[in-house]
Length: 551
Image (cartoon, rainbow, N blue to C red; front, side, top):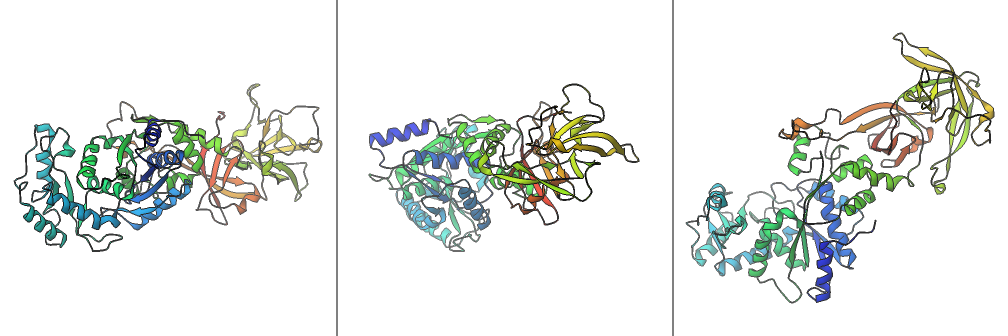
């Protein structure tokens, strides 16, 4: 899908034409403390696609300035997700690689009288900055001398003080109506081993200080972020203006765009972690999770996600979209790419009484009726078959019923006409087998057209069929209502978010590979799961077909 114009692209175009920048350089700066979800996909796609529109480039920079939450596991997952989406960063960088430079800039601010070491606790600082109480209250340590601040800051670096005992704060304006400008903390103490820097540092820069400096060091021209950072922009500009990083070619600017929310979907890293920790899901790659790794396992394609995100446009307003919208893009992407075999999710045994026992016939069938380039396959037909329980009813109810019923004739897809003559019941009165006859003169493709069957249904031959488990998913949260809107999200978990059923697929699918996509005839789009074994395949339902049938 071609990306349409948006306000950020307009800004970039104007900046190039005015000469403010010579080249567009953006960055995607994830913190490696969780798996990326579909909300992050908007940021990734926006960064890469807008830069690409102008022949620019995009860096991947890990914001690894908080060692208490970061892991190499998350770094690897993010790299895989970005590659899966089809993007290659111009550079892969780490915020931690700039620790020495950022420390120098903090020293510079101290020497300029624009930063000081504070002894107040985190709670005391938050209380004194509270905008609900009018002007902020200045710290009693705000006017320490430059010499004392330099000494204390160096002692912080040397590990002389415990976590939380001291911080370094920017000296800006405690009367500002914007709380972010009320002497924000720019360095804190954290005695924890860093996943890349080891124990070299025990002080770490805060995001609002590190991020603009990293942008400047890398020559980022357009620093794109979500709208909640709108009121952080004055601090971003303050750091850029006071840390001597502006050059003729380097002066980054921050621009914000609205978040994309998806109805009844958890898009909070903290909440997603809670789901995993409480074992409400099997992991971050659970197919019900909105993580990119979960969506990928479910069978959602990268192109579908990209086209979905691009279709939502870009503005400074937060938006919420129905999750079924993504399904439309999945169908559009896969309808000509996926083979269309038969899968019987609710098996009902059929015995063709006039077909020879032990004989198997292999019939030609196209892999995709809308795309001849996908070729054809052989479909087994024999005396013992499975059809879907929903394709049979004892008595035909009306003319709209276009499937099998007793004394009614239907066509088996790519095979023959069959007619149900009798049924077999179990001890509980349930139908467990249909006794049918077939007409060998009605072989598909034979040109037989003297009579019309009561519809066409699909099947699998029973003796060659491969057992399969099918996992059907619904939204992890039930829809929001007046009654539940104030509930904790854990109380809104959908008890029917996963349904596991067992059936059969065509024999050739025994060689399926993990991640392969199929449109199971009249069922929907599915993907082979990593839990598949030689004795039982596992398929995840990616999405339904556009229209379903209600019996």
